[in-house]
Length: 111
Length: 114
Figure 1 (cartoon, rainbow over the protein chains, first blue to last red):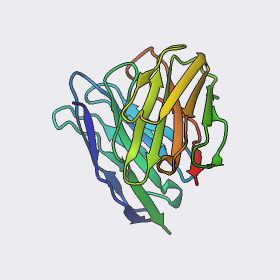
Figure 2: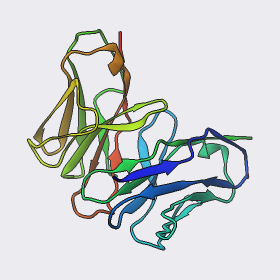
Figure 3: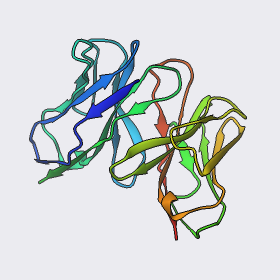
Figure 4: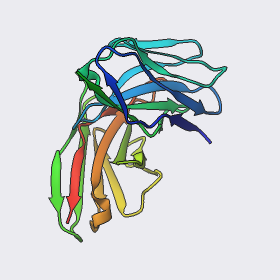
């Protein structure tokens, strides 16, 4: 069946460090891929998405490229800030309704 | 600005009580979802609905029911609350137009059952 695997963390980085959160997936067909972010005490919100192979999603300095050959959608940011501290969820969607979420990766950025 | 609202941010109920969690979206979305979020377990789908009066079981429907009488409103019901239902509950909605359309989430309701 469809599934998403991501590093669970927690990940702790110093401000201005480079961030990578790995995400790999298993899916039939051609999924759309997403990264959601959850700030403390809030619901999830979309960070970026990619709907076909080789697409790059980007937002707020974060980027992820849809790699069909490696079934991956790794999240990267060149210089993290304290305000990026949150939980990050990789997700996929193969149909018009349900989303499959990864377990989430907790990120703490220290000054 | 698109919005999904949930009736309460925090709720404390006693074991055995009937609990209603309400969710409203203003985006005219067909799909609506209820998840629970627990540390170490991520998001788990309880129920979803793709149309008024339609519902589908998710991964963990036991102990829950849902109601969707209007397109914009999706209610989660705990018929007899138990302590193992203490959790964060998240509502979400999405359109049925494209696989690439994302889900929009409410702020969550943190339910404590004592």
